[in-house]
Image 1 (cartoon, one colour):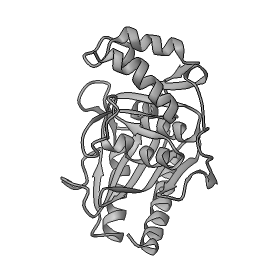
Image 2: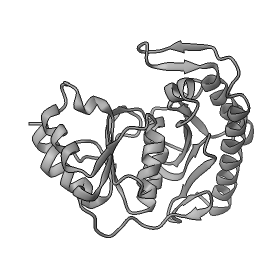
Image 3: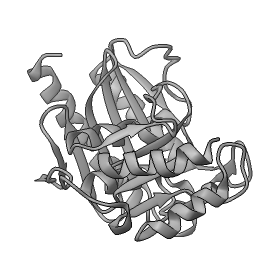
Image 4: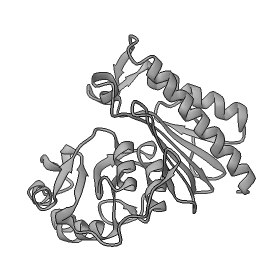
Length: 269
């Protein structure tokens, strides 16, 4: 993709994500239509739907040859990441949005022929925009994020963990994962994969593990993390399948290797 075209796409994406965030903040206390999807805790609101529709209208009117994958289903039927594809979560952390009115984000990723070109994660209520362009580094509110530390150890690391890792499940031995929590300096759960992945890129978290995420949950965060020298795989250490649900394991390379070899591999046996 030519740089001039990418410049325009990046500029528009930032403009739209900030505008969508302002709308959400302005309406944060308005009544909401709330329903559930796969289970009673899988919430969707009228704000989720309206925000995704907003992006759809902007993208299709400005870049009619681009495609959209969105959580709420207003986008295209995309079978492969050919051409330019926007992957959007209009509100990542809907339960937080509904109950706490904080700790949620808009996540926008732009891929061209399967390569992540632009990643944006907007922590709406904190007015913090994390952004990255391939090969140009990652930023927080236009301030460049430093590369991740050259070395770090698990015992001095804080790890983001979905609580389901610590419950009985078919993927891992929960007792070994409890040992991971005891070994790390600390563990956190924020309720928004996008925010937690942004925190990995920022160095606030040294790692993040989730059992099952959709493309709109991780697509932008992967771009950010790669730009600061981090790594993102599934829990088996293999590459992420961009158009499928995946387990996701992102973090500092040394912490990633330690957790994978000393904990996850044993927990998966």
